[in-house]
Length: 311
Length: 261
Image 1 (cartoon, rainbow over the protein chains, first blue to last red):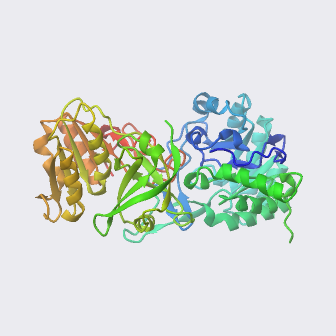
Image 2: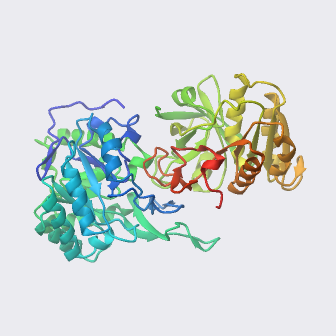
Image 3: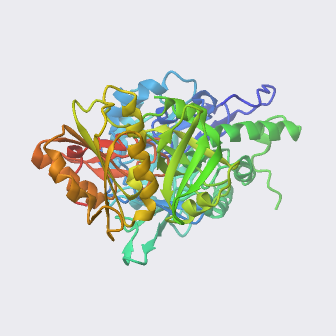
C-alpha cells in the first residue's frame, strides 16, 4: 500500500478539456464501484480520477444471473447497468468520495436523449463532480446505450443535448462495435465533446457445450480484459489521429507497459478496468511505474510520452 | 470492514481424494480478522489465463496465522491450485463478505453437502469457544462417496459434534440425500446452518420454513472481484431485485432469496 516512488520532481499532470488531473491513470466505470469498495486496498488519493459506475435517472436492478463468465485472458459481462439511480448516488455515494482530492467523474446512461440531458442538468447542480462521461456504448441493455453509440447522428444528438445542460467537461465513451469509430468520434467532437474515451467492451458470447445453453443469461455480453487490448490500442491510435480533442484509452490495461502503449498511441490518459477485479492495486502500480518511466527517460513530464509513437 | 491483500504461502497440501484438495496458507492478517462464513479471493498465478481470482470460503483458521481452503478440482483455476506445492506464494484478498450469525439462540444443526462442508468447519471451531460449546450438537454431512467425507467427518467428531453422514452410493452412512437426515432433528433445534449445492440448500430452506426454524445459507456464485464492484454475483432476492453474494452474503437468511433456480 505504501507508495514505492514519491519522486515529486516528476510532472505527471495531464489536461482533459478544463479538467486537470494529477496523473493520467483513472478507474474505468463499472469496475471500481463507487470507490469505497476499494478503499482498504487502494489509496484513492493517488488516482488521476475515479469514474463511478454508470448512473441512470432511476435505479436499475440489472440483468438476471449468470451475469459474468471468464474467457481466455478476459471476461464477458452482462450486468445490465445495475445502479442506485442519480438521487441516491448524490445522497449516499458521492459524499464519501468528496473527502479525497481525486476528481470524481460520473458516467451517465439514458434510454432517451432527454434522459441524458436531465442527468447532465441534475449533476450540473451538484458540487464535487469534475466531469461527466456519457455512456453511449453499453452493449447490455435493450434500450439506449449502444443504440446511440453506433450511429454518428444519434451520438452527436446525445452529446449536444448533454453539452447544452452542463459546463462540466463532457467525455463521450465510445463503442468498438462499429465499422468506423473515427466517424463517431468526429461527430461527437463536432457536437461539443471535450474528450472521447474508448473502448467500451466488445460484444461477445460463450456457450456451455454440455447444456447447449449460453453461459450468460443475457446470451451476449461485453468482452473485457487483456484479450481486447490490441483491438483497443488500434482504435485509440486511429481515433487520436482523427480528432483534435483528447482521447482517453481503455481496454485491457493492467500494467505500466500497457498504459505506456496507449499513451504512445495518442491517448492523453488511460482507464484501468477489469484489472481492478483481479489485481486491485494495479492502478497504484501503474502510477508508480509511469513516474519511474518518465524519470528514467529523462523526460520533462508524462506528457512527453503522449503520441510519441514512431511509425 | 477491512480487507487485506496478502501474499500468502502454502504451508500444507492435503489430498483428501484425487479431486479434493485442502491447502493451508500462511496469511496472518486475513486469518486474524476472519469470521466463520467469510471468504477469500485467491489468484491462481501471475499469468493472465485464468484471469480472475477464485472465491473460497474459509474452511478453518489456526492460531499460528494460517487458514485453510477446501476445494474440488472443477476447472483450470482449481487444477492449477491443486498442483501447487508447499512454499508456493498465492495472492489472497480477504476476509470478504458477511459470515454466519454466531448466536443461534439455542440448539442448532449444521448441514453440509460436498464442498459446502468447508465453511461449516470454521463455524464449528468457533462455537467450541463460545457459549454454544455443548457436546453432541448435530452435524449432517453429505457427499457422493465416502472418500471425500471420511476425514472431514472425523474432524467434526473430534470437536465434539454428533456427526451423521449420507452418501449417494451408500458407502458411508445413510444412502441418499443428506437432507433426509434433517427431518428428525428439526423439532429439537432453533437454527440451521447450511452450505452445499443449490438444490440441497433449497430443500433445507423449505423444510426450515415449514417448521418455522431459522435457516442461514451460504451461497456460491461466479464472482469477478469479491469486493462489491463487478455486480456479477447476483442471486434473486425476495421482494424483487438481487442480492450480491459477495457483499450481502455469502451467508444470508434463507428467506431473503428466491429458491426457484
